[in-house]
Image (cartoon, rainbow, N blue to C red; front, side, top):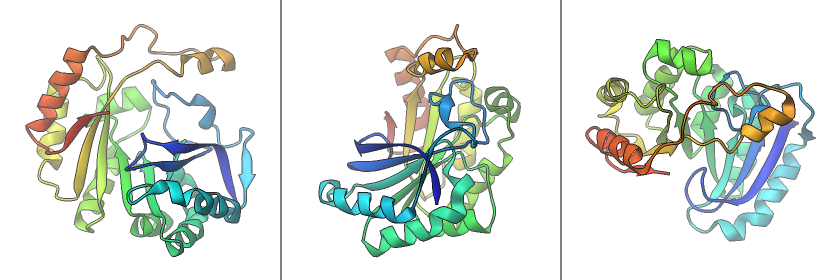
Length: 242
C-alpha cells in the first residue's frame, strides 16, 4: 500500500516523454519555496492505494508513453516509501514501463539503494551546494544528497541534476561553481535542469493558514535564467532551463 497525494496524467515536466506522475505523501525537507506544502505531512489525509491499482493505471496509459515516457514517482519525497515502491517498480519493469524517481537524495538505506538499482532514471534535486545556505533553504543537511549523487555516478545509474534558481538563496555564483567543480566530470548526469523559482503554490499556504516565507522574493527574469544557464554550461553539457 502506498500513501498517494495525487496523480498527473500526460505530464511533460518530470522526466522524458509523456509520463504518469504519482505524487506521494510525506517529505523530510522543509523547502521555503515548496509548491506542494500539502504533501509534506505524511499523516495528512491522502489516498492509501494498492500497488496493483497503480500498475493497472500505468499499463492503461502505456500506449501514450511512446518510446521515452513512463511513470515518475515524485512527492513529497518518494524514498520515504521506498520499501513499498520496490515491488511496484518491479511490476512496472515486467510491463516494460520506464521508471523515474524524483528525489532530494537525502534518505539512504538498503531499500532506497535497491529502488535506485531498479529505476531507469533518477531526478536528483540539489537545492544548494553550500551546506549553510542549504540548511537555510530546506532546514536540513545536504551531505547525503551529495553522497547519493556520488553513489549514482559510481554505480552507473543515470540521473538528471535539477536546481531551482532562487534569488538570494541558490542563485549564487560561487555556490553554483562549487557544485560544478564537484560534479562537472560526472558521466552519469544526462541532463542539467535549471528550474525557475515560481510562486504558483502560494495560494496553498493561504488555504492551509501557513506563512509563505519567501513572499518578498521575485521570480527570475529571463536574463537571470540565461546567466545561470551559461554558468552551468561552463561545467556541464545538456543544460536546459525547464
